[in-house]
Amino acid sequence: MGGDPEDPHLVYANHDFGSQDKDAQFEEMVEYLDNNYISSGQELYRSEQDLFRQCLEWLAAGASIEVDDLISGTRDEQLTEAVGAWSSDPRIRFLELHALKHPSGGGLAPGLVRSKPWRCLGLAFKQGVAKDPLDMLCWHIITLYLDGRLTVRKCRYAKCQKFFDYRRNIRRVYCQDKCRARDQMKSREAMRLYMREYRRIKRTTNAKSQKRGESWLKKLQSMASRVHRDSPRN
Image 1 (cartoon, rainbow, N blue to C red):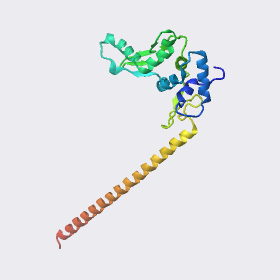
Image 2 (spheres, helix red, strand yellow; image 1 turned 45 degrees about the vertical axis):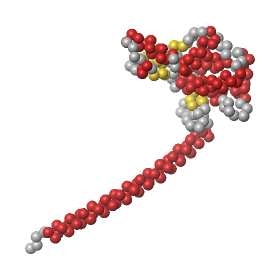
Image 3 (cartoon, helix red, strand yellow; image 1 turned 45 degrees about the horizontal axis):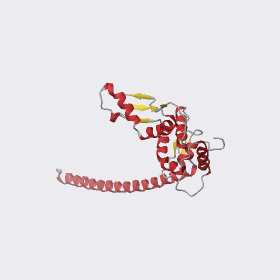
């Protein structure tokens, strides 16, 4: 996309439709897609963003879907049931619709099916010709996944949740430094509260132990006094 964003899937996934601030990268991406494919307007992007984000996160995590609880047939029927349960997942249906059925038909299939427990792994698909703006974006993330280049992660800071590419630092878990700082501030506050509660419990425990110790001391002194009193005298 000469001149357009380097990672269009991240631009779309992270765009804030509720913000009044200008997002130049998103506008450039939309302009390119609308000029080359059927224009569907901003409402399409807005309405499908949440499911697109789910698909992006799922693919980045390895595209695994647990279907063991949905298998109930005989041994000969279980493979068909596993693939059927996999194909009915909303993420599969969304990607299949926008990357394959819209353009020229075709469909998706699991790359591998395993048993005990039954699990469908990965994706395999027949390439088509995109005609819808979202078709191109879905095609793009599937291609990245199949090529092993979908190095995407969601920011660990709960109030952010933006996606970022971690190619340059595989250990990176925050999209930017300020998210790490804000999350660690929260962690430090949690630790402060934890230590305050720990010290309170320790003081209470020590006080109880001291009282128990004093009680045992009194009992020992009383026993010693009785022994001394009752012992035979010469």
